[in-house]
Image (tube, rainbow, N blue to C red; front, side):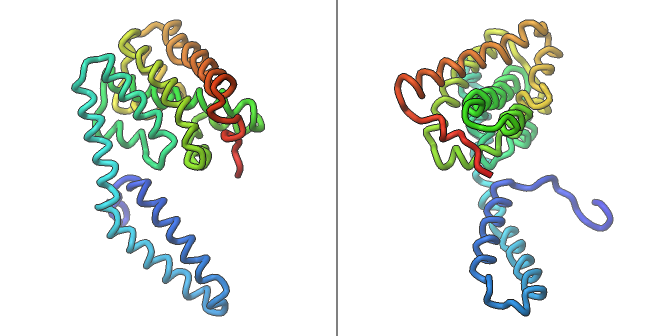
Length: 247
């Protein structure tokens, strides 16, 4: 409790985005209808929509809960299958309106499971960087490399085919987790390469720096480039422009 208010974390991102989208729609509908009363009306509308968010929260949170239960089930499988499934899942979630960090902490992922989840997030980062490099300004690519993968959500939602290189690459890099014994902690599980958190967590877990760089940076980059050539140039599944960021 802080200064008379109860604090309960960041809340559910899906619910936040839902209410934000609803707010935009309502404001567009009200535009120009009550011009002289806007300064009175808008705060009231905002408060009412926030109240709607309180009612939708329990139902929307079920989505995150189901995802969490699925990941918990994966942790009970044999190491290679577990690592691939968790890696692919987190690779998908990082470009979705769901907090991978929150899920990793809430479930308490540890050991290989934490390493696999971080590897999934890191793999998506590398895949997006590889594709962004050819179609975006350097600033966009640098932003993605530094951890702003969610800025590409619009591209992914508009072109679901962009999930193909993400899933394919993460399925391969997921195998590296038990192969190199890449481990992590609940705190590093959802970060991936952001601040090199996942890499350093695996080094802390006993992996040498040389092998960590190989597993986290070199191999995923090579695999991402090869899949880009396969899917974009050979199979023509998509064109490079689907990864072009538009602000």
